[in-house]
Image (cartoon, rainbow, N blue to C red; front, side):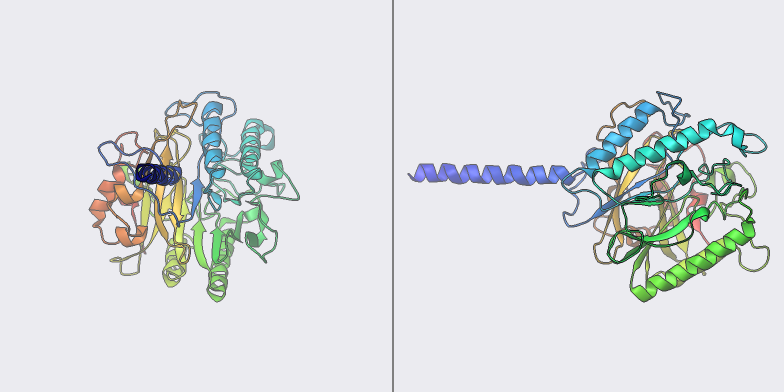
Length: 440
């Protein structure tokens, strides 16, 4: 009898261990950097969201190679991978997409597309917007999209609305669940909901994906160096209006006690690639207005003044796995960190990737991220990943708390180990793009 009871206890212990192992496997992103230990188990209580950017879908191509935009096979594999996360037992709380939906197209002196030359561009836009809607339809996961420089109907770096006041979202109308924020209530009461969209044709808005968190989705193409307004609103007027609206949103968030994630496509700071090529200007944002603080200095002041409430800055555009440190006015102290999601497109010779960000459920502080990546020719995405806390040696420290203790040279060296999303070392000096400072 005693032997039977001992055997039963051993069996119970074995089954409990199996259960713990399987639960860990369900929340443990698979894979690791070469030479590193396997990734540790994510904190079970830590919620997360997905960050996707720069798919650049080319519906005319089935295949994808380095230096090309995303073809049908790679996009199908990406959707299946995302769907597996969305339908898991611990799904993401929401998804953000930080711009650049359709494939690039050839342009020389001007990238403007007249209405009779937009068929291919519009087809790519229509396909990916429909696919993104379908991706979150079953799970009803909130999805938030901000404009990229390639997204305007009139072409690259043009205003979000064209001369007829149509936007990319006009291509996939759905009155009951419209872009830019899917699966949210049109007015706020209970999250997820839309907080403010004062100028839908300008592309910026605010939303609440979960209680206590305010997403401020900016259209930073307006502040870019190559902006071409075709909507009848000058760059200066549009840029000033967006900056004033941003200030209002941060004030409202402070009154409401909300934490803030700021979403954008083009980040502030230096374009490291242009700087390495000796191109001028190397700044990401235009140095406008001509008098007083330019838009970058205005933005940095706003972020510094609201650092107690700003819990994250997230962007796309560069296609690489990079980060930028937002410094205070002295230039000595990093007050915030802006973090990219790499492109799904391998057009810049990066591996396709996207991210899962983990955050503290009360402070909303970003505590870690996992980058999922694959090869351009993949027909199934696979399980390759790496984790921020391991790459940067942060342990259990939150992202900003870890980075602000590291010398800038060490941050740059560590970033370069994953910059191309595991497709080798960078081909240009990247460190110039990390610090974002006043009067830069």
